[in-house]
Image (cartoon, rainbow, N blue to C red; front, top):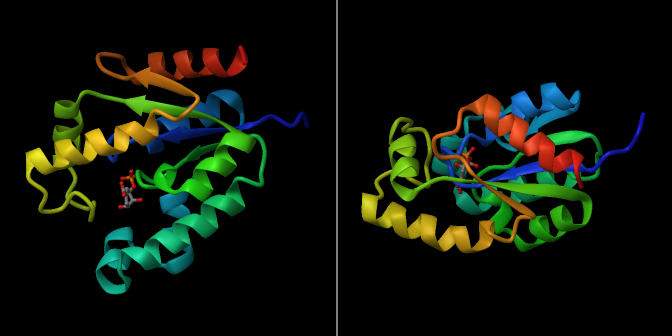
Length: 170
Ligand code: S3P
Protein backbone atom coordinates (compact mmCIF):
# COMPACT_ATOMS: atom_id res chain seq x y z
CA UNK A 1 0.00 0.00 0.00
CA UNK A 2 1.25 3.47 -0.85
CA UNK A 3 2.46 5.37 2.23
CA UNK A 4 0.60 8.63 2.54
CA UNK A 5 1.03 11.29 5.18
CA UNK A 6 -1.58 11.38 7.92
CA UNK A 7 -4.23 14.04 7.83
CA UNK A 8 -4.61 15.66 11.26
CA UNK A 9 -7.63 17.75 12.22
CA UNK A 10 -7.08 20.44 14.82
CA UNK A 11 -9.27 23.11 16.37
CA UNK A 12 -11.48 23.97 19.30
CA UNK A 13 -13.93 21.71 21.05
CA UNK A 14 -17.07 21.61 18.95
CA UNK A 15 -15.24 22.26 15.68
CA UNK A 16 -16.32 18.89 14.25
CA UNK A 17 -12.93 17.17 14.31
CA UNK A 18 -14.40 13.77 15.15
CA UNK A 19 -17.36 13.73 12.77
CA UNK A 20 -15.45 15.22 9.83
CA UNK A 21 -12.56 12.90 10.56
CA UNK A 22 -14.83 9.89 10.12
CA UNK A 23 -16.17 11.15 6.80
CA UNK A 24 -12.71 12.06 5.52
CA UNK A 25 -11.28 8.68 6.43
CA UNK A 26 -14.12 6.96 4.59
CA UNK A 27 -13.57 9.03 1.45
CA UNK A 28 -9.81 8.56 1.46
CA UNK A 29 -10.03 4.92 2.49
CA UNK A 30 -7.80 5.71 5.47
CA UNK A 31 -8.12 4.56 9.06
CA UNK A 32 -9.83 7.06 11.36
CA UNK A 33 -8.20 7.61 14.74
CA UNK A 34 -9.87 9.74 17.38
CA UNK A 35 -7.43 10.49 20.21
CA UNK A 36 -10.13 11.05 22.85
CA UNK A 37 -11.71 7.69 21.93
CA UNK A 38 -8.37 5.93 22.20
CA UNK A 39 -7.84 7.39 25.68
CA UNK A 40 -11.37 6.49 26.77
CA UNK A 41 -11.01 2.93 25.46
CA UNK A 42 -7.62 2.40 27.08
CA UNK A 43 -8.54 3.83 30.46
CA UNK A 44 -12.15 2.60 30.32
CA UNK A 45 -13.08 6.04 31.63
CA UNK A 46 -14.87 8.97 30.03
CA UNK A 47 -12.69 12.06 29.48
CA UNK A 48 -14.80 14.04 31.95
CA UNK A 49 -14.22 11.37 34.59
CA UNK A 50 -10.47 11.35 33.95
CA UNK A 51 -10.35 15.13 34.48
CA UNK A 52 -12.47 14.87 37.62
CA UNK A 53 -10.76 11.94 39.27
CA UNK A 54 -7.18 12.11 37.97
CA UNK A 55 -6.77 15.76 36.97
CA UNK A 56 -5.81 17.58 33.80
CA UNK A 57 -2.04 16.84 33.97
CA UNK A 58 -2.76 13.11 34.02
CA UNK A 59 -5.02 13.52 30.98
CA UNK A 60 -2.45 15.66 29.11
CA UNK A 61 0.25 13.03 29.66
CA UNK A 62 -2.02 10.33 28.25
CA UNK A 63 -2.91 12.63 25.37
CA UNK A 64 0.76 13.22 24.54
CA UNK A 65 1.78 9.57 24.79
CA UNK A 66 -1.09 8.28 22.68
CA UNK A 67 -0.91 11.02 20.07
CA UNK A 68 2.84 10.59 19.54
CA UNK A 69 2.33 6.86 19.14
CA UNK A 70 -0.46 7.26 16.59
CA UNK A 71 1.64 9.74 14.62
CA UNK A 72 4.07 6.90 13.81
CA UNK A 73 1.41 5.49 11.48
CA UNK A 74 0.66 6.48 7.88
CA UNK A 75 -2.60 6.65 5.93
CA UNK A 76 -4.65 7.81 8.91
CA UNK A 77 -7.06 10.62 9.51
CA UNK A 78 -6.44 11.72 13.10
CA UNK A 79 -8.93 13.77 15.09
CA UNK A 80 -6.99 15.45 17.88
CA UNK A 81 -8.52 16.62 21.13
CA UNK A 82 -8.90 20.41 21.27
CA UNK A 83 -5.80 20.77 23.45
CA UNK A 84 -3.53 18.39 21.52
CA UNK A 85 -2.05 20.89 19.08
CA UNK A 86 -1.16 23.24 21.94
CA UNK A 87 1.44 20.73 23.10
CA UNK A 88 4.74 21.64 21.45
CA UNK A 89 6.04 18.07 21.27
CA UNK A 90 2.86 16.86 19.58
CA UNK A 91 2.80 19.88 17.27
CA UNK A 92 6.36 19.44 16.09
CA UNK A 93 5.81 15.74 15.38
CA UNK A 94 2.67 16.59 13.40
CA UNK A 95 4.65 19.14 11.42
CA UNK A 96 7.17 16.44 10.49
CA UNK A 97 4.82 13.54 9.77
CA UNK A 98 1.45 14.87 8.72
CA UNK A 99 -0.66 17.46 7.01
CA UNK A 100 -2.59 19.49 9.56
CA UNK A 101 -5.90 21.23 8.97
CA UNK A 102 -7.42 23.80 11.35
CA UNK A 103 -11.21 23.72 11.39
CA UNK A 104 -11.96 27.36 12.09
CA UNK A 105 -15.34 28.87 13.08
CA UNK A 106 -16.58 32.23 14.32
CA UNK A 107 -16.31 32.60 18.10
CA UNK A 108 -20.06 32.84 18.53
CA UNK A 109 -20.76 29.65 16.62
CA UNK A 110 -18.12 27.76 18.59
CA UNK A 111 -19.47 28.98 21.92
CA UNK A 112 -22.97 27.84 20.93
CA UNK A 113 -21.70 24.48 19.72
CA UNK A 114 -19.75 23.95 22.95
CA UNK A 115 -22.87 24.80 24.99
CA UNK A 116 -24.82 21.97 23.35
CA UNK A 117 -22.60 19.44 25.05
CA UNK A 118 -21.85 19.58 28.76
CA UNK A 119 -19.26 16.79 28.72
CA UNK A 120 -16.29 19.05 28.06
CA UNK A 121 -14.40 19.69 31.29
CA UNK A 122 -12.33 22.58 29.88
CA UNK A 123 -15.40 24.61 28.95
CA UNK A 124 -17.49 23.71 31.96
CA UNK A 125 -18.40 26.76 34.07
CA UNK A 126 -16.64 29.20 31.72
CA UNK A 127 -18.59 32.37 30.94
CA UNK A 128 -19.07 33.22 27.26
CA UNK A 129 -16.44 35.91 27.61
CA UNK A 130 -13.89 33.53 29.09
CA UNK A 131 -14.63 31.01 26.34
CA UNK A 132 -14.10 33.72 23.77
CA UNK A 133 -10.72 34.58 25.32
CA UNK A 134 -9.77 30.91 25.30
CA UNK A 135 -10.69 30.66 21.61
CA UNK A 136 -8.64 33.76 20.80
CA UNK A 137 -5.61 32.49 22.74
CA UNK A 138 -5.76 29.03 21.23
CA UNK A 139 -6.38 30.29 17.70
CA UNK A 140 -2.89 31.80 17.67
CA UNK A 141 -1.55 28.28 17.99
CA UNK A 142 -4.10 26.56 15.77
CA UNK A 143 -3.02 29.00 13.07
CA UNK A 144 0.31 27.16 12.94
CA UNK A 145 -1.51 24.28 11.19
CA UNK A 146 -0.61 23.81 7.52
CA UNK A 147 -4.07 24.85 6.30
CA UNK A 148 -7.05 26.68 7.73
CA UNK A 149 -10.58 25.89 6.64
CA UNK A 150 -13.33 28.36 7.40
CA UNK A 151 -16.23 26.10 8.30
CA UNK A 152 -19.02 28.70 8.56
CA UNK A 153 -22.00 28.15 6.28
CA UNK A 154 -20.52 25.05 4.71
CA UNK A 155 -22.04 21.61 5.08
CA UNK A 156 -20.01 18.57 6.07
CA UNK A 157 -19.86 17.10 2.58
CA UNK A 158 -18.56 20.34 1.13
CA UNK A 159 -15.97 20.55 3.92
CA UNK A 160 -14.84 17.01 3.15
CA UNK A 161 -14.50 17.88 -0.54
CA UNK A 162 -12.50 21.03 0.28
CA UNK A 163 -10.11 19.17 2.57
CA UNK A 164 -9.61 16.29 0.15
CA UNK A 165 -8.85 18.75 -2.63
CA UNK A 166 -6.17 20.35 -0.49
CA UNK A 167 -4.74 16.99 0.55
CA UNK A 168 -4.64 15.56 -2.95
CA UNK A 169 -2.98 18.61 -4.40
CA UNK A 170 -0.05 18.68 -1.99
C1 S3P B 1 -10.09 19.39 25.29
C2 S3P B 1 -10.90 18.97 24.26
C3 S3P B 1 -11.58 17.66 24.27
C4 S3P B 1 -10.85 16.66 25.17
C5 S3P B 1 -10.62 17.26 26.51
C6 S3P B 1 -9.78 18.53 26.46
C7 S3P B 1 -9.47 20.72 25.19
O1 S3P B 1 -11.64 17.16 22.94
O2 S3P B 1 -9.64 16.26 24.59
O3 S3P B 1 -11.86 17.49 27.08
O4 S3P B 1 -8.54 21.04 25.96
O5 S3P B 1 -9.89 21.51 24.31
P1 S3P B 1 -12.66 17.75 21.82
O6 S3P B 1 -11.96 18.90 21.17
O7 S3P B 1 -12.83 16.60 20.88
O8 S3P B 1 -13.91 18.14 22.51
